[in-house]
Length: 234
Image 1 (cartoon, rainbow, N blue to C red):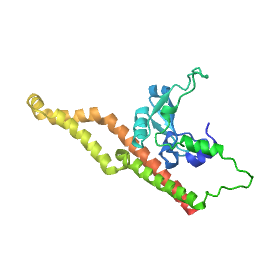
Image 2: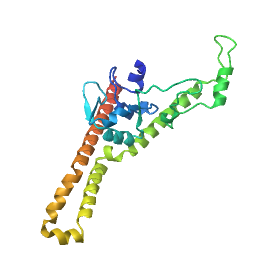
Image 3: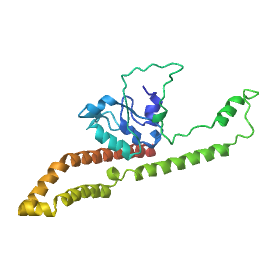
Image 4: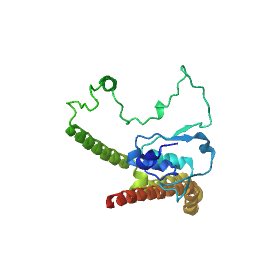
């Protein structure tokens, strides 16, 4: 449904590739993602990472974690719903618009529409190339700041040290909950094996999900870096 230039320029994915992982790209920071609420009842969903020659299987819980790690909310809607839309019932999707998307003030919009040049080739005297250059420089700085903030908000899936700390913290919490005076008196020497079994039973699925998200994030990050490296060579 997106124009071709949006797929290649903003989402930075090839034609025919539909993937929520494209929101990882800095150029897509102003893009809103709508997900079908029917995905929540599915055990696995299949997406392309950033190319249409590889597929990743992931459940919606892990997808939500990934989107949260890059600062994107999960917006689930009923895409099969057909609500009445009219003059008194306009469609309202303002709640899914990213809060950092710039909007033009009313006075700028009015002044832009009210000024009509006298001649076809007329150029306003107060429009100077320096203003454009300054705006471009400011936009580039803004992109760099946003990217660093985005990476800083996703420590678990991007930073290996914090990823390991997160796993160790979860294991430590289980051990501290299991090792207490009551269990020591009740199980004695068998407490060690009981704690080990409880760790495996309680954390196996969660550890698999976290490891999968770490792998997917690393793959996406590597693909993104490769794309930029190829562009720099051209």
